[in-house]
Length: 301
Length: 301
View 1: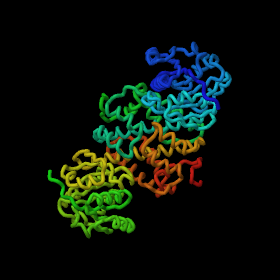
View 2: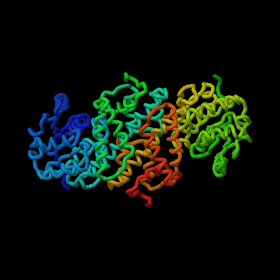
View 3: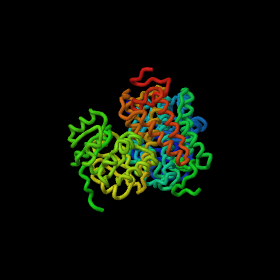
View 4: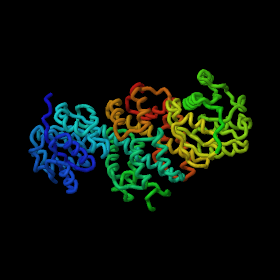
């Protein structure tokens, strides 16, 4: 396999993960082209040293050796690549790393669309949160051809502490990410349920948090998200509606595989109730607000 | 408060936690008296330097400055203290540290029984697993009088890396432990659900384990227990039936507090089904065996 000649990358979607990944690529010496609909994000990335920024990737499509998509869902991936005409404008054999959390089925449909334009896809969902994205230390769970991994090596090296090669078949990366999200979502909902019960039992929440994070009941999500509950700070780091989306992808996967998921389906109900109660745009820890009959720091009932 | 004069401790219940705690007390220079019904456990503790071992604590009741109970449930605590007559035989003002996982209601009943014999209770459940118990690094979540904490300081110092003082009221320690067990139980069941879905999707389980343990979907329990699934080793470190018991304590607590627990009740159903299917005495990771239609390492269907 030849050494990758990728020198420029278009990063599409400059939310907390995309912005961190784009800055990591700049630090690694790549020419970064940033794309988002939010002018503030474009300005921030421009100030961080991007080669160019725009609300539409088509204007610098011919400059790109690779594309990294960190948008919200499959609909946005398809809109950017196919509805806007980007796939038709990219150079043949450009590597496209699709890092949104999407279903295996959508990943396969996107691959077919890219193949029609002689483009090479890596099915490459990410994890780790904004801090790790900023540090260039995301976890990437990827599937695709060896050529796709090779071409994208500079981008993977720049953005990830750990890259898993799940296999050649597009869709495997998506599935591993979805199973990961099952755990992440259930852990947030379980953390909320436990802290709500503690509030009901008049246990100080900061003490409960301290005990759990020093004992075997801890999870990455409990430690990260229940701090927001203790602090009464529901400003969105990642929103409730993201887990409504992701746990619905989990449910779709279960349906496709004809498999029961008693806990994930329960957690989905909790996030969906929280969204319907008006907390969809708050931090995902706001799922705790589905519980009535308790007092929480910083929450008026 | 005077410096504790506790020099001897009876450790009752020499399972994985009690044995570790007893050995830690011996290393700390305390005179340790070990009690269990299992002769092998008694022999092991005798070889480790216990002052004496017996199947009944009454024979050395007068030698004890403190008692540490690490038995399975409230019924055993009550049987040891009250049915066997130990509470009547202990010296007045002996400190009794009750470290079984029990309900707040049981903790209060036990306190009343001890008070009738002029004994001092610490409501002091523990967490951390066998390895931390062995190292003298348990996490202890305790409630009780300052006198109880002071008297038991040598035992707490010997056995715990971290001691939380939840408050004076007996029952608070028990409640914090139960809320902790809600998380521990849900995390094991969620880990099993995720790994079962991975098996159904033909994702190699060792790879799935590796991804999760390096990403935000991780939990202490996932990392510890799902290794057993990857290895196909269901020899009991902690049994399914322990979580049937503990999640029933969670359910009792929810009933007392009139509070809904959608995830914990679902996890209880999973562990109860696993027990009824014949896996009650296997490692608690065997809750994954409630899922049909998958192949697991080391499991014949």
